[in-house]
Image (cartoon, rainbow, N blue to C red; front, side, top):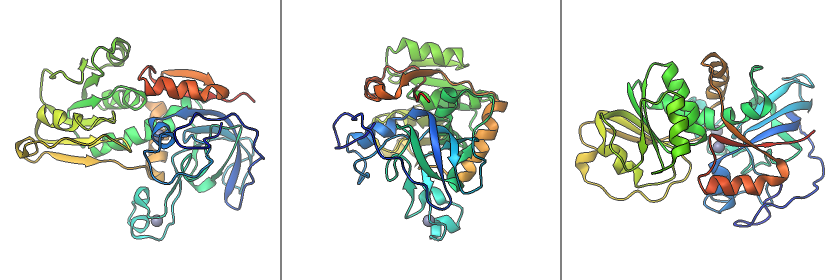
Length: 323
Ligand SMILES: [Zn+2]
Ligand SMILES: [Zn+2]
């Protein structure tokens, strides 16, 4: 499925088979997760995507040929960080997620809304055996970047999650495993998301316009809604950290300094490092994280994106690619 022009639906097309270069693997795609970032790219909210472009950065597939890191036939995952330079000041200081020349899968590089994909082996991750293909796919961005956001939220005991979609439903399980108390905020009146949050162990569930029963020690904002920033600060305890986990957000309205005062921290989380990937893929089966998925055939990618845009997906949307 190909994005030919920004703002237009994906087109079903027959493409030539991609060729793998040195250190790249040719991968037969089994499943690919659908992420809100895919919508931001397709809608033209992120600068300079490759066009035409194959979206998709949560690829689970098997190696057809490669440079030797993985065996032929081995199942691998391809995440968002597709390539980093290794020599810039960010790469050299263990922050390859901020690499000045980073290339991202399904943005600068063709991704996994396809039958075949090519990926740099050094940036692929092993996929835990316990997971079916479609259930493993959301681990690769929703899980991974959610995990990085949780880590950067610090050791908060009372954790708020704003926007209860693919990422939050995974982070909630990891947070409960770490014995944190979770307060889940959904779109007002979203009964299905609220019920899912409760079933996964949220102590309190409400609309994003509601006040939690206690102050929060940290909050992660997954929804691309800037007005949630002052809202989360308003219900946070002294010293709390508010993490914005999305790649794009509507403008943050101005707010009085007293909301930030008392050592509250406001920060974003960008992308992932290979170490995040390895750590999280090892952690997920030990929690164990269970992913709730809505599965669509590859040709119905537009329908999956539309449901995500409307906020109707329960858990994560995943494309299943028939072999
Ligand atoms: Zn770099
Ligand atoms: Zn993503």
